[in-house]
Amino acid sequence: MKRQNASSVVEFILLGFSNFPELQGKIFGVFLVTYLVTLVGNAVILTIIFLDQSLHTPMYLFLQHLSVVEASFSTSIMPEMLLVLSTKKATISFGGCFAQMYSILLFGGTECFLLGAMAYDRFTAICHPLTYPLIMNRRVLMKLVGFSWTSGVVMSTLQTTWVFSFPFCGPNEVDHLFCETPPVLELACADTFLFEIYAFTGTLLIVMVPFLLILLSYIRILCAILKMPATMGRQKAFSTCASHLTSVTLFYGTACVTYLQPKSRYSPDTKKLMSLAYSLLTPLLNPLIYSLRNNEMKMAAAKLWQRHVAAHIP
Image (cartoon, rainbow, N blue to C red; front, side, top):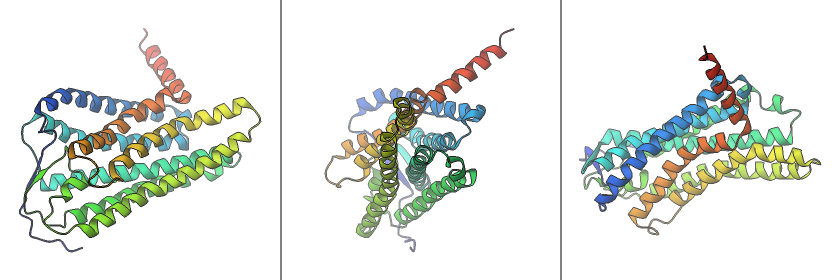
C-alpha cells in the first residue's frame, strides 16, 4: 500500500491514566516490580534449560523460545509504560511508536503459534510415544519454531506498515499506556474501515488457527489418556499437559477479551485495564506456571542449586 505523505504528527503523547493522577503514582512501583520479576523469572527458566542436559527435549526447547518471547514482549511495553506513569506528559516519537507496535504484534503473534506447536508436541508425545523421537526430531522442531517466528514477523510487518501508511495530522494524544493498534488508529486522518475489517479478520485467524490446533490436540490427548489402563499413567500424562493448558487458558483468555470485542462496549479506561491484564499477567505468570507445576523443572532447579552450593563449600 502506498504511503501517504500528509502526516504532520512527529510524536505522540501517551495519556496513560492521566484522568487519575493519584493512581499513576501508586501503581508505578507495582509495575516496576512486576517487570523485574518477569525478567528474572524468564531468565531463570532459560538458564535452567540451557544448563541441564536432561531438559534438552522438544518440550523444553519450545519453552525456551516462549520465555524469550515473554521477556521481549514485556520489554517492548514496560519501560515506556513506566515512563508514562512517572511523568506528567509522556511523549513517544513517530518511529518509536511504530517500533513498539511492531514489537507487540511480533511477539504476540509468535506466542500464538508457539503455543500451538507446543500442543502438537504434547499430542505426539502422548498419542504416539513409540515414534515420538522420529516424528518430533530436531529438524521438525526447528521448522515449527521458524514458522512461529516467521508468522509473527509477517503479521506485524503487514499490520504496522498499513497503520502508519495513514496520515496523522492531529490530534496526537494516544489514550493509552503504549502504542497499541486501536488507540493509534483512532488518530488517523483517513477512513480506516477497510483496515479495521482486515485487522479484525487477521487477528481472528492468528488467534483461532493455533487455538483450533490446540483444541484438536487436546481432544485427541484426552481420548488417549482415558484409554490408559493405569491410574499412574493417566496422572503422569495429565501432569505433562497441565502447565501448557494453564498457559494457553491465561494467554487466550486475556487476548480474546482484549482484542475480540466490539469497539464501543467498554470505556477507554476499562480497555486500558484489559490490555494491562494481557500484557502484564501472561509474561509474569508463565515462568511461575512452568516452574511450580512442572516436576522436571523443579528437580532440575534443585539439582543446579545443589551443584552451585557444593561448588562454593570449601
